[in-house]
Image 1 (cartoon, one colour):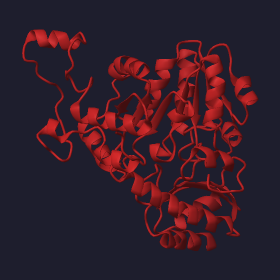
Image 2 (tube, rainbow, N blue to C red):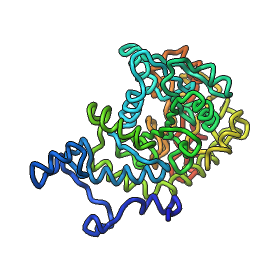
Image 3 (cartoon, one colour):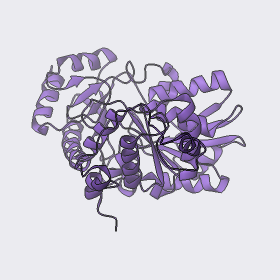
Image 4 (cartoon, one colour):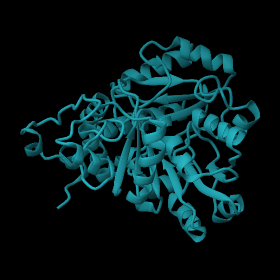
Amino acid sequence: MKKKFETEVIHGNYDSAEYQDSLVPPIFQSSTFTFANAQQGERRFAGEEAGFIYSRLGNPTVKILEERIANLEGAEKALAFGSGMAAVSAVLFSFVKTGDHIVCSQGVYGCTFGLLQLMREKFDVSHAFSFMTTEEEVRSALTENTACIYIETPINPTMRLVDLEMVSRVAKEKGIPVIVDNTFCTPYLQKPLELGCDIVIHSATKYICGHGDVIAGIVAGNEERLNKISMTTQKDIGGIIAPFDAWLLLRGLKTLHLRMDRHCENAVKLASALMTHPAIDQVYYPGNPKQTDFNIAQKQMKKPGGLISFTIKGSKQDAQELMNKLKLIKIAVSLGDAETLIQHPATMTHAVVPVQKRIEMGIPDNMLRLSVGLEASEDIWEDLEQALQK
């Protein structure tokens, strides 16, 4: 019988008896695997016998990670990649061909935007952005050649939300798969597959790792679709994860629920303090009751997460000066680490996005994104407050 999430992140899909009774999954730091004889090698390459061949095609440590993530997401299968963008590109390439069309949430990670631009320029795969606030808006964005719908929710860095159940309902009318970047929430806070979506992507670099020492990506979903990705874009493009990195993610997963609870607890306190500060213009946070999509957060997220974006009453230069006055909070991109991090989306994570498109996405020059860490919330706020006062 399946156990609670908090138990599955520690014990799920691992039998120590299969690995010399090792409590911790071992690292299989091997590029290749030997066969008992030539016939066994032939059978494995033909797919007639289970077993490992070469670590680009599969590795025992990586397999343990993939099975555990699939279990947590409620998926049939998961695949691990060398980065979040390796995961995103593998998925999108598997769904589209020349002349196809992708519908995206209005606002995506800067490198995802760059990939979409590249696919349009080199492969004639077009895309369109939509806020997806209503069924009619989703339907109007679809075309005859729409191959998939790609969603971030919360959206990076505007923190706007998309109703996944609603979008999935519309997509199923047309037989269009829905892909969700679930990085900000992790399977602990949000489960897109249970809401009708087809594929979940994570930049495992972030909360799944939790310690800022791994670059990795995860894809989870239907076994048939993921087998196709595994044997095409993952195998042939080769954006695989290293066994040691997979082992580090397994270690990070064991405290995922504890860390996410603390990230959320701290973020709620800081968002509340920012909302009442005279130097702050707006606070963008799924836990903000004043946000128009607050009801979506209540419906599909267990907690509002650890990311806050806010605009200051000032210019780009003022926003950068605020960052420079911080002492405890570190200026860095990425998120989900134990340390609180702050970045300026317009000139950092979304610098590749043309100015007009960035404004349409809701990313002005005076916006900052805060990844709330695990420190004492009082210390994080003290640092923010002194910078705001200066």
